[in-house]
Length: 374
Image (tube, rainbow, N blue to C red; front, side, top):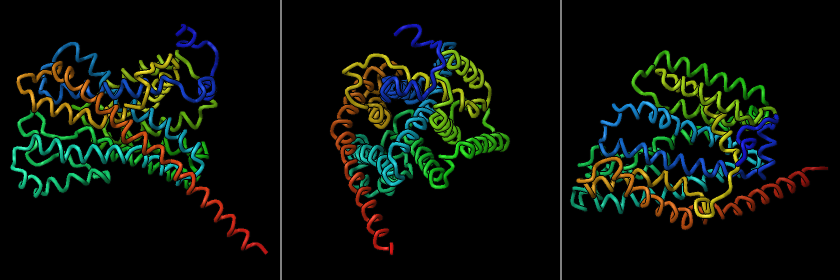
């Protein structure tokens, strides 16, 4: 990669950069992968009880990086999902594609956690385990009503949650619903109304901070994640007018870092975080045929947490964050590869059903118009 590619001197727009990379820049693929691994890395401290690292000088810098992971994920998702909406043509196809991308892999992960991990690690006898209301409620995860616990599972771990990573799922669903509403109302296609909506999100966040401040937590909560998503949508919608610039990206990094160290400052990082995330995503380094042979990021996100918990439970003598990473990352990678090739990719191939359904709808609508005409 040349200096000019990283720090472009020309006034290339985001749209032009997408065109130059064939609308498939490898930067987004690498970014999804590394952010997913970053989630596993941050959880290695939380799940092993290695709280001492929070007091070290290294964490004062590393903590800023960790706090950016979820915001970057949602900003990246907003940008890419807005593109999916425009390419889909219809709202039905767009929402259908979202379901195909998220629900099959999530369903498999929920069943594996409940049936395999639960049976393996529960402290209860199996009859009591399967009769427990906690076991039955766990399957509400399939519809986005997140349940974090299974009966008797990981009770000896420092953290008892089976799948704490799923806290983001309801907010991602909220993002899709909001985007769908914006499309139905015509606000997405009308740039002025989209800007007004984004301003409204920030006004809501100001009120949220005034009435619900959190001076201890410096990460991103649910409302912050949703705003990050909307900022990603904003940049995609105005991609023709916004420059792709390394200088602007660097300024946005500085602004984001400054805000992230201020109590509640992360709540207002949406635009700068979204910009430098999209800038990185639009970089186009050579594709590694192994790392990018599939989209393994979702599988890493889904399985990383329960795998890490299983490692903590199976090897209590090795409860340090670095041991957890050493064993968990390879296991999570293997499962993520299996999830992609055995579940996610085959389900995504079913998108032809959506195409057929849309063709049927259009032909039926044409027939109705033909029959109604004099």
